[in-house]
Amino acid sequence: MRIAILASGKGSNLRVLLEQAASGRLKAEPCLVLCNNPEAGAVEQARKYGVPCWCKNHQGMERGAFDAEMLEAMNKAGVQGVVLAGYMRLLSASFIRAYQGRIINVHPALLPSFPGASGLRDALDYRVRLAGCTVHFVEEAMDSGAVIIQAALPVLENDTTESLASRVHALEHRILPQATQWLAQGRLSRPNEAERPDQSGRAVRLAPPAPGSLAATPPPPPFPCLISPELEEF
Image 1 (cartoon, rainbow, N blue to C red):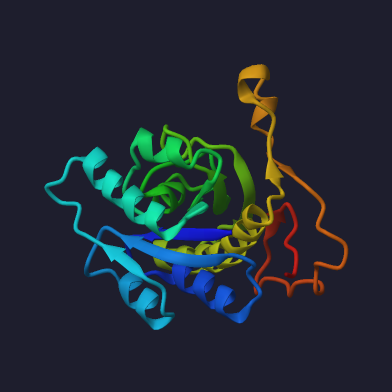
Image 2 (spheres, helix red, strand yellow):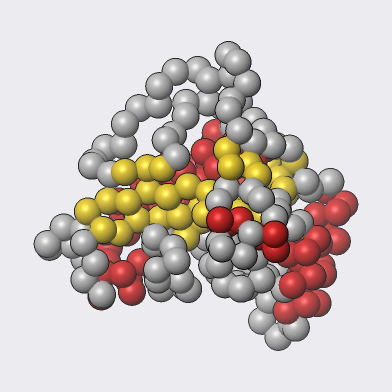
C-alpha cells in the first residue's frame, strides 16, 4: 500500500514509520509526506529518508482549499492510505470522504477520554491512574473514529507532563507502525455502524495474519504496560 504520512511537528512517529519501511519490516510504501509547518522537524525526516515532501503553511488559507491542494498532491502520488503522525490540524469532510476507512491517527490518550490537542496533559491534570495512547480510524468528528489498538500504562506519583509524554511516545512508536502494517495488509474491518445502532458496529475486526508472515515474538516494551490487541513482530 502506498501511504501518505501527515505530520506537523518534530516527526518522531514519522521517523519510526520511515525507518521501518526503509528496513523492509513495514510492508507499506511511504510515497509522500505532507506537512503544514515549514519549520517542522518532519520536513527534515522526509528529506533524510528520501521521501517526497509537500509542505505549505496553512495560515491564511481556508481549510477546504488547503486540503484540496493536499488531495491533489496525494492523487498525483498514487496514495492509497493515510497515516496521521502528529498532524495538528483538523481535516475537512471532503478530505476524509476521499479516503474513508483508509485514514488512521495516533492520539496520546485513551480515547474516548481526553480528545483534542492537549489529551496527554489533560489526562495528567485529571489525575488519572492509567494513561496511554490510541490508534483509531479518522472520522469527521475530532478523535471519534473506531479504535484499532490502544496501549495503557500506569501514571507514576511524581510524573510530569514531560516524563509521562516520554513513555507514551515510546508506546506510540510501537502501536502506530503496527496499525499501519495491519492497514497495509488489508486486515482491518468493522461492521457497518448504520446497521448496528447499539455501538457494536464500532468494533474493529483484525483478520488473522497470513501463514508464515510473522517473524517472531516482538520484544517487550521497556516498562509495564498493556497493549490490545497484542503486538505482532513483522
